[in-house]
Length: 541
Image 1 (tube, rainbow, N blue to C red):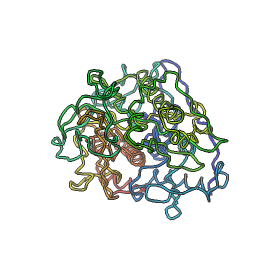
Image 2: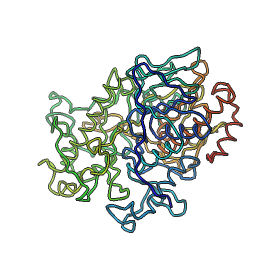
Image 3: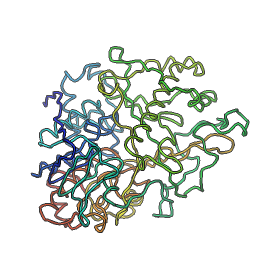
Image 4: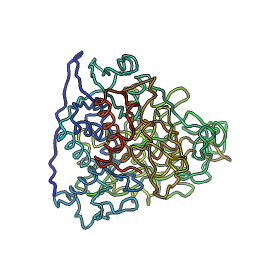
């Protein structure tokens, strides 16, 4: 049995203008960045992992403790190792600090949370996920540099190759191969690689689930919610965040982003619970749709309370009015991807305050029924999570930002297995998933638009190597395991954290093979790449 102790990673602080060099440079501390770095280091390469947050694991260690896997047969290599290490952690009685293992419901998505057959844990506490990532990086001897890419200076290139990326403050990180493991795709954009944002039309790739959906779909608002500031009076104006129309016909493409949220880690254990306080800029008008939803009969599903070990939640969006701040990540001339780092911090803070305000409202506001207030008053922030961030998750759930535009685009048809993938470097199996994108007036009521949940029946599909490599004429030494080349709705399945880990390892492998062969990432013979991936435990079709 593996015994875990909490580790503090040594992070290199570099003076302005100093240069650091490595064989492989990984930008992004999300789970795919960790697996890419670990794989490259295990293949004998010198690796620098650039951490934007100072905490490893991205969403996996920021509250997304209820893993979206779809079919655990896709898990191989380092991803499988990660979930197995989590399982081992919870076999130690000392891991159960706020409940016993016997009282834990042990429910995951279609499988036991702690599965004795596979010896994998698909639900877990954020701090334990971070601990496992920290251990993997330390064991591999990876150098971590904390910083963010300079969104003005960006990268240095010679021809079609990146030679260095520049961080805020003037730090220069040189490398032979680079991996963009950020959720935003910042490195690929700074390297001059083509990308898209928003939703394509269904016609673009002959899909069914892309573009504007209309008022269909799950996580919908109840009927009879009046859209106007003064009920029944169009002249009073629309409620905040409500558009007069969809902005096009069903199936059309647009510029909009699916909603973001924080995956809140709440607990009902009194000794580990902090009360929810009202945000300083609280405005009850921001929750008018919530009040009206309650008035027309909504009684629950305001946030999920799916449990991870030790009586904590992965509190995700649960209904038409819940944790998602719909429309809060884009405007008519901006979106999350186009913002600078400081501007993103402002938007992230607004998301935090929206969700804290939602919780406070549900627990305290007189326009919320006493029954709802009482039932939800048991939840508060977990004292033992995110201790250096006021017990709030480090990462906002950026469900989608830039998507690379390469020579190969993963589409819904590949995910549905109607078109084959000839060069898979990993597999996905999760639902074609998009959260709502906007609110609009439909038949005199407020309705949500954009939610898609198309179940793939757990059937695994391959993800093309060409979808994680740019066009050779744009960049020859970059791999992109998350902001890869995919349509909006295909990305909705591929984007899940376990798949990110899988593609991260495959990216690290490809980077090392390209160094060894002194060739571009596009020139690696697929059979040679496949052979190495299988040798290292990856699962491929």
